Length: 150
Ligand code: ZN
Image 1 (tube, protein in one colour):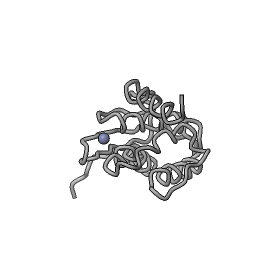
Image 2 (tube, helix red, strand yellow; image 1 turned 180 degrees about the vertical axis):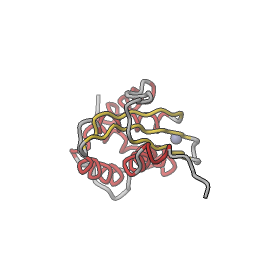
Image 3 (tube, rainbow, N blue to C red; image 1 turned 30 degrees about the vertical axis):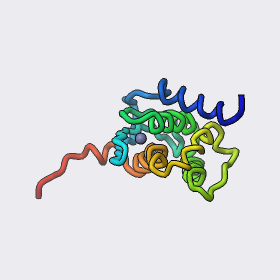
Image 4 (tube, protein in one colour; image 1 turned 45 degrees about the vertical axis):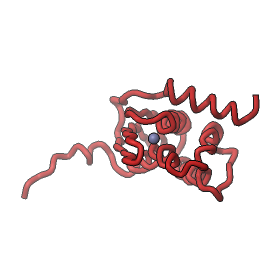
């Protein structure tokens, strides 16, 4: 079995049996993302304590690539600091850029590199990461604050 087959199997596995695919009641950061090109929808849930991701999950409906990417992402996040995640996110986006390099630090996330030859699918693969960044920026408390009328 060559590395491409292994990566394809990993995407298929995470696309059909996603990990951490559930709402997270203890989440203190959440965000929703939508990729109108494909119809992928995702909600990312994070429990962040002392700048560390203690727990991460997602819910949503989308194609196999967006689901696999979200599943692999949540696995990669748990236990990492926000600083490490910001570097990981940049490395992942570079991986899907035609001129980008594949870094060893990406581990299993490298399985998605093959997507870069299909520009429309790159948005499927990066949706979870854009949503993650939004979730880190906003806490659920802010999102849930009712709009007050003046
Ligand atoms: Zn998609």
